[in-house]
Amino acid sequence: MIANGEANTGAGSTIAPGRNQRSQKPLVQTLKSLPSRIRLVHVVVAIGVASVFIAYVSVAPPTDLPNWPLYRLNSRVWQTFEHWGQHVKPHHVRIITMALQHIESRALYILSYFEIPDIINKAGEPLSCHEIKSRVDKKFGSEPVNLPFLCRVLHAAAHFDLLREAGEDKYSLTPLSEYLVSSHPRSLKEFVKLYSGDEALIVSTALSRSMFSGLSGFKETFREELAEYLPKDEQLREIFSLGLTDFSRLHAPAIIADYPSFSSCHHICDIGGGVGSFIYDLLNYYSFDIKGTNFDLPHVIDTGRSFMAKRGASNKIALVPGNFTEKLPKFGCDCYIMKDILQNWSDEDAALILRNLHSVMDSGHRLLLIETIMHIGSYSEERLKSLLDLTMMSFHPSHSRLRTEEELFFLLQQSGYSDPQTYPTRASYSIIETFPIPS
Image (tube, helix red, strand yellow):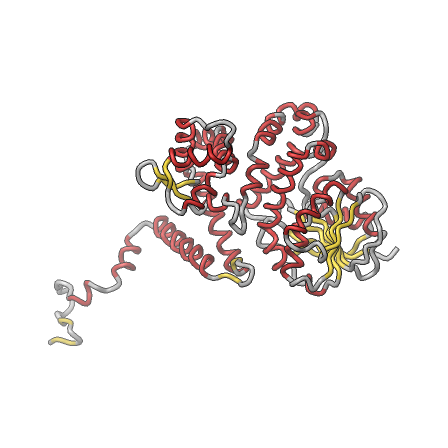
């Protein structure tokens, strides 16, 4: 008797499986036959691939950032893969790679300094080493680059994922090197020239002496702290200004999108805002419906005037010179920002700066500390923060450091502020909102 296409052969009988049985869930059967560890790896990999795909196709306009749940999922998956990848790699290979990473950084700098990504991007097609050399020589003019050395650097850059070898002796851009193109909306070209450049290399090599002296690498090298030296060196000052502007522009969309109350501000003051890159991006996001003031040292404000003029914002943002370690003027703002400020100062000086600002704030005004906070991120984020912290050891006075949330809260409470609340962002920054306690 045949029922539902199957032979009823009675108990204990065996038959060759029919077509339907052979095709029944082969993937499930295959997975069940695998050891449990391998099945787990397959599941994790599948989740990882899916999360990466979703995070890149699902964004929250107009910030071009992954939605928060996707951002968190993607961050955790990448953290897991990166952590596993480090442990899978042989230990001796990890040590050798770490020892030579400064060479990779120099290759990155050479590409940026000689504007090779810009040259390839402008050509609109892959270029050979000879073609790149001729364009570099024409652009720089003073001394021709060495062809064999240039070709070796380009070949190495291709293995660092900074270039793609397209055919015989031809090079094109990769997604990484697109961030080194000047016209890229999130270009990091100037940031690379700052932190992978000659000055940064010299300063970082002084860290071994800093371990004994307790001085910054910069002071060990130049016999002055960075803040004292910059006003005297126009070229280095420009490198710093452009490099930090790149870094600010990269993170600005996440900071602006992830703090919910910027729109309730009527007049925002950026205290120590550099040339004004962040407050420009912030007010531009709100179509300049909010008034803005940028406050910094006189020589920084002078550079800021040029920055604002190039963007047609000279009449939209007030530029006020001064020093926040001294008595501050009445700004008339209801919202104050300090971004990357307290990390450069000792606890005593940071408290002084906070009290100086407190003296010009009224009840109901708010202060937003935008800081990179230690010990609250993923494995990958904490690794980046550690690199930034060691960079501060190189460039800034010995008391400069990234702080924990508890340390920042304590500073605020000691300086007359209350109700601190931390807002995470889809960047390496967090925002601490706080209010002055009436005197």
